[in-house]
Image 1 (tube, one colour):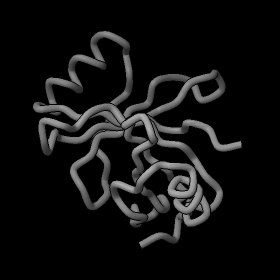
Image 2: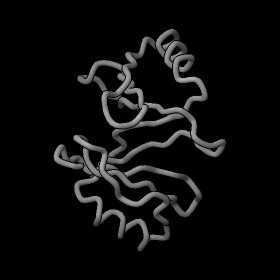
Image 3: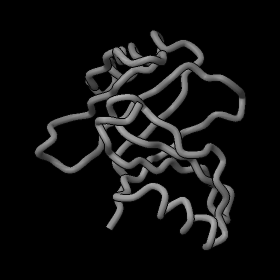
Amino acid sequence: MPRVIHFEFVADNPERAKKFYQGVFGWKIEKWKGPMEYWLVTTGDKAKPGIDGGFSKRASPQDTVVNTIGVPDIDKYVKLVEKNGGSITQPKHAIPGVGWLAYFKDPEGNIWGMEQEDPSAK
């Protein structure tokens, strides 16, 4: 069964956000070495319940928190979203070295991500 595996939020000032979340919760925050400006957030011990996430610089005022669901076959789940009344807001695209990602809107207007792990994604 697919589960939420990652959270994302946006920040007007990434360094201020980093300082805040490290100061309040003690989260470990590191700039990603990938092709885009992104910070990875480790929220705790992987042996305990919880998820890690990341954040990027806010691109538009409508940007908000997005949770990402891990799926075994992103193409199958894109079709299931559309068949069940949702819509794809950002088509499947590669996150190099990580996998395939797509964003969708559910029938209630909420935006979610779906990710299929695939280290060979380019």
